[in-house]
Length: 514
Image (cartoon, rainbow, N blue to C red; front, side, top):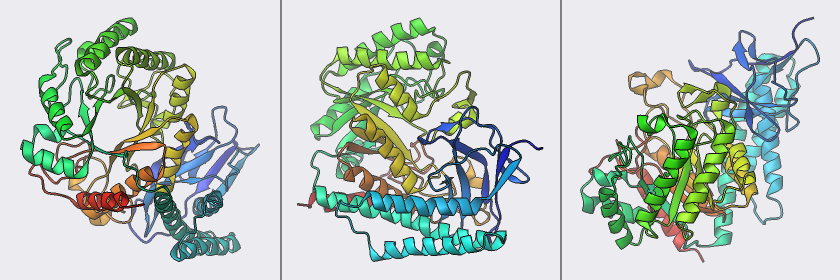
């Protein structure tokens, strides 16, 4: 008797050179949270034999659907999930499992919108039907793995297109129903200020945005805020803040605490837990006290959900620091709003067991689990921040991860939104790759119009949901941004990318609703 295991067998019918299957695979529980398992890729396919105490799971795998993209997508057995067999092995066709999951999810999503008055388009209906029809053909050919896979791939192609169209059509419907939102915040970071001619910066910024982020990274910023302990650099930020306020721009300050290696100076990384709390008490009161009510929103902590953890804090300490920082900030100025910002929405780091680039020393949680834990601990904050960079996921999965946070009953900011405007991936190292040899991630290889598509879709989703109060693009100008070509301007000389024009048109349309 062999080891009990489940195998998802990839059958490669794609015509291109690939890669068609990424080596990194995730297991998720019934709530959608990633958990660590022994999932791996072997010669026979994706193999799982130990769920580390979990009973049911679904899979998230990056798979190439030619004509749509090379993206992570779920296989969840039509919402019934998978279990390990009691003995021996169970082999499933990967493409077929992905296709039937997508068709089922689309149908459930359509049903969830019933009663709202929403009627989807004729084109979307045909996409849904094509996905269903090709899945039926795949079922008829289940004994012929090549034919089954070919039909499954076609089902996936149309069902993926349908899922994306469905989310955007529903968002557009809700925007028309809800009307203009005069208080909605269209935002961006302001680090371009320090590299651009000042009048040009404000001309470009105010045309696009009414919300600005001023960064206070201790190190690693355009102008480091506190490279030496106790020596904070307010002057340049004060100058910019005053000019933003003169132009009626609402300002968010960020972050009061972020412990990623990129921004953590050695003097902070070496502090004990008690000394960290002493520093944060002084730091938070000093910074908030300096600005008073000029800065309306403060990001209290950033990416602390067992990922950015240069001080090697355990789960209990992370929750304690989050609550402590919120309490100090609230006491320092009760009039401002406090935001907790989360990254890595799909929590790949849990399977990688990584804090950034370092090996994690303690068990890890997803951002959603962390948010639940700090709320249960009594952390006093007003806003949940979610980062919505393009991370190899479909629009449907992106929307649904955002919607999960609504259960907490707090308003949200889409705190960082971004995608590249050229290249193969969102990464930083692809200059020497031949694009012709690589599958595209989403619709085609990245260009300025595709970047504008990502901006338009995410801002549309944000504007459509009343509990989302802000959408914040990251970053303003290349090459200053976090993403290599992620700026909304081509350079500090102010040349506009397509995303600028797209955002201007969106705002004009929405401002003229009834």
